[in-house]
Amino acid sequence: MAYKLLESKIKCLMIGIFSGILITTFIPDLLLKKKSSIKQYDDILDRKNVYEFAEYSQWPPFLTDSTFDLNLWRKHCWTNQVSLPTQDPDLYYKRNYTAFSICKDVIHIIDSIYNMKTTIAKVEYPETFAQKIRKIFNDDNTLYAKALEQELHFVINKYSFEHTVYNPLRGRRPIQPPELSFEVYLNQTMEKTSKSCDLCNYQNMTAIDSLGRMENQYAYSAANAFKFDQWHSMFMPRQHDITKLTFKEMKDVFTLAWKWFQAVHKQSPSHRFPTMLWDSLPHGGASQVHPHVHATLHSDHYYGQFESIRFASERYYRDHENVKKHHQKNYFRAIQDIHMAFNLTVSFNGITVLVPITSRKEYDIIVLAENFDERFIKVIYQIVQGYFNKLKQYSFSSCLYLPPLSPNQDDSGLTPIYYRIIPRGQVSSLLSEVSSLDLLSIYNVNKLPAALFAEIITWFQKI
Image 1 (cartoon, rainbow, N blue to C red):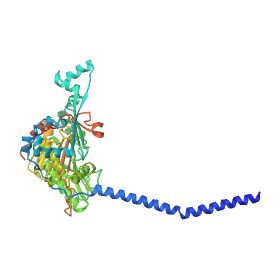
Image 2: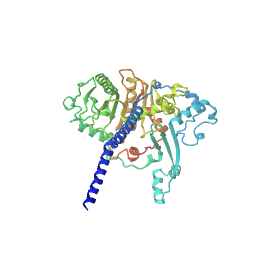
Image 3: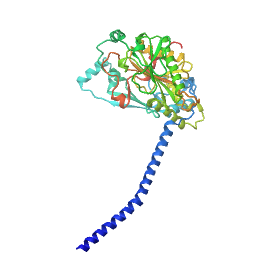
Image 4: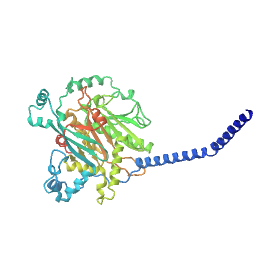
């Protein structure tokens, strides 16, 4: 019995000794190899992310003149349809258009960026509901027939993945009107807020950044009290009522922000990417009624939404690197060409205004420009005045992205001046102008681009 117990203890001892040798000899080596392989994998991922995110090519310069003969295009190809070529090409292009090289070239540019299609959504209405639908259409049998078989026009940008569906009939849906008219709302709001406005009393009630306060005749700066970036300031006109904003006041706001961008970049050269954001009135997302423009200068890259467009431009350039016509490699110029072909642009010698075919809302407008100057600011002012005077849209959100600042004259990934403005609904409405459709899936627009452009083009005077 004692012998068996001793034998068992010896076996346990031998197993322990063998296990110890195994653990101390082989497992550390295995762990080191695994750790090394994980690090190598992480390094590969890091290198890939840095390369894809940060490395840009030197694109051909953006210019606002078209890369093709617009007169020939209109003569031989495009039939000036009010819709987009989302169905059978023969419905949109002229007879024998395939015989002309210009038609093939421009259609190739269109197809290189956009996919477009139309689908039919059939609907049946019970008789009682059908009567209500007919009433909405003022007993127009043609419109009622379209409601039974609704045309949905889909447009997607294959590089930026902006995606829009157009259904003009949705614009006729009955919507509850605001309780207050916009005139009454604006008058009451301006009178109430002007008496206790922090931005009017800016010297005592606004913050200052390390550059100090900047001022000119009609505008002044203030650091944002609750920043969303290291360099984040605001620029305001002295005018409290946005509906009375003059061109001189807007010009002073924009030029003062530009002066601030240059001062920040001089102090911190790594901050290179200028952005201006402007929300109008509370329904447009503004925290203050007094007009104020947010200005930021980010390091490394633009903020995500515009950086995704910038990287779409890089991908387009790489896909077209071997194209013989050098000017066709600029993504922004290709976008401009496509909208010119669809008669959705107006140009002012270095400035192009367009209604994007991937609009986010009705009266979504993009401005592309070669230079940031007084003429550019004048175009922006006329758009804002068009919103106010023609549309009675006083709430909007807008952005301005300026080309990267660089102490080394690095012109890789160089974007044009890019401005975009989107209306935010009636100022006094309790209803939101966006839904899960717009925020989380696809942009829904209820007017076709040609109909929108026909209104917008009347807003501009000679620049």
